[in-house]
Image (cartoon, rainbow over all chains, first blue to last red; front, side, top):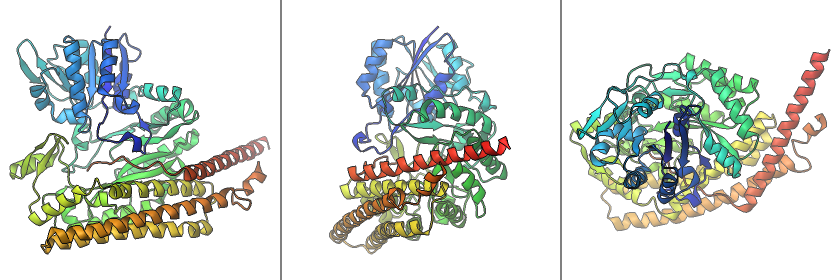
Length: 557
Length: 46
């Protein structure tokens, strides 16, 4: 019997006081630890991110538990904390077997093992079966698929072949929800993580979703049966959702609907099963721009009945050249078609995936993207300033390295750096990014999202209760106009700045225009907030007041 | 692409208004569900 402790280190760069989202459990650790629950082993999870704990708290827990195995998950945001915890744990207990995992570590495994000699192994790709073998066989991991490990006696680093993904996902135990139990006990609001599918059938050049879940080969997408997913949801519903304090369920599937008929039928069957089993909870999903087409209303409406309240769309760009560069296998027209159906059904999420700048950005591409983003309310300054991030493992790292366009590795953000080919756009991108910490820009990134999310939630619920009508449309119109004006202001400043940089205007002129914009932006944000306040009061009156639209229902009960 | 997680919490008045609205909507949903069940029960007892 062994004692295993899993740790999810905290993220230092997020200001937790302002973190809008509720606590999110680490689903990956929940799935891995579930493999060991019910065995002779003793397993526990310390989620420093969810509980907002310091690295020193993790060390205290490690000292208390003295596990035989310490498994740490790390991504680009918490990697430094992971290394710090691992280093200190190794100093305290040199015989403890220390392994890392997760997407970031998978694609940096060799560099990590070379640099951090206290790390014994890295689990690469899907971890469930690899974990069981690692626990049974460590430190001799020869022949264990999916591990990159250190042979301490020979002083060698050994990379074993990758492991094929688990074929039947219905056979995997439901995730260990120890974190949800903790939150329930301490009356903390929580978000629930779910994974109904693994993989992605697209091969975008900036993303690892396709390769991560099929490192050892196998199907690009594997789906759990709707019955299996709903069985897990039903447990979550009765054990946690009915208790209250659940924000929503986040499906982490890379692309919830892949655009195929089979995928749409699966989504409808899942939605129907959720409704049939009476376990409707609000949930959010990820989609591509071409996941849905005009006429796919039934898919969206079924999912809405089952609780869908927001979709995060990987837009990236509305420029066809950029989309080709990202190998998105989609045109801007297809993207717009997919976005329009989500907008029509009011399920566009609070934000979307946007990549404005890449090594080959052009003025036309930037301006085109900015303009179309505003149609969907996504032209926040933060979105308009976003730059392509090159994570370890993505195809573009290899391609740009071959073209000698990589300029190094950013050890703070754990991404590769590159130079934008057009010097004028390189300077523009740097300038815009430098404004991101301005308090007004931070507010612009946050306030509209919060307001529009809350509005959509209320409107969608009214629609589901069949209380949505033209009167409500009129009530919300002023707020929508304010949101449109805010987006228009951001786009206008963005285009103006592109032109100023192109014309070679001196920085004093650019900064003067920026200061003017920031004052106007602050005013617009105030208008938006005031408009939201009055809209909320009107909706309150409409829903709860004496002549409310919901009164009729009282007679029924 | 990186996702910025920061967002404000909202004013006290808004939190109160929003909370009232949601309580009402949840109450109406529960009443509707109850009403639907009654109708279904009536149908099956015919």
